[in-house]
Image 1 (cartoon, protein in one colour):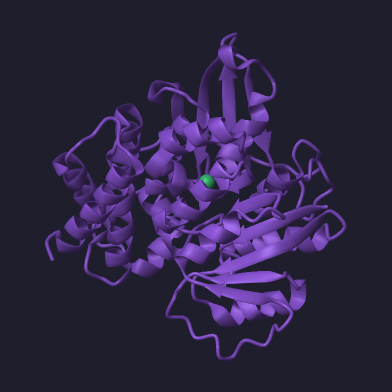
Image 2 (tube, rainbow, N blue to C red; image 1 turned 60 degrees about the vertical axis):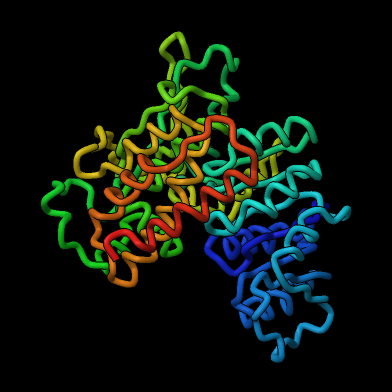
Length: 379
Ligand code: MG
């Protein structure tokens, strides 16, 4: 029986993870569920799954309506960190959104846990620190992000020294095929209408700008210890091929499955085993078309920022991620145009005080600085 701490249990990754837990209740048991401030949903999950502990990250959250009396509730960001390091937790599922996921994920890594990581910001912001801590503690990082999970699976086909490059696939989002000038006046609703994946609003906007792929390039650079020039992106609108690994002999190994996050989540929880799953499977009796096309760097300039940050490292990831988080908020509240998201991120990235070997404190300081800059950008 694996005992899970599920961080962000009311979000998109969290609810998919609980589907997997419910389907494998003889193998997986939730020890901790956490939410930011959706107390009612968390309460309902606790009534159903009966974890001994729940954590509400927002210290202002109102717990007066809590009815799941067999679950103890802790409150506040430091409670998240304590929950991530409990001795009776075997696997931490990092399903939080944004840089807020960094402190508890880092705590779990330091405690040597198996960490199923969906929170790409942890690696984007602090990749070298997180990987060094994992090396020191023996923590195993298993990617849930579908592309990285696919790369992790495909890497098993050969030796690490024989990897030539990895190719991350991108759906292209709702604006695939549009030119830069056609993106000038897109609405919030258009940007939120993702063609193949159902996800939260932050990552859906990131998919529309392709900033999500930029962040994934950075995530892959640290997670798999690759150079930026060993990472490529190809647009694959069907979201069936989740990513590919090319070896030195020219062989390319891919992972395919219908788009459903429950598969990479389950893989990260079951690894090195494989369990029969609840996700839909390929129907090989049906005709299918899998198409691949190069990304349009002019219409989606965020993508180039990802490669630049993967090349430079240091404080760049923290700055790009923080600037983008605020830019997405500003786009969603109507105070920033779609194309301005990448433009503003680029100018803040260029203006920042670059440090090639930052400490965690430096990274968090740069994160705060970049957020403030983005709040002020043409405001
Ligand atoms: Mg992804």
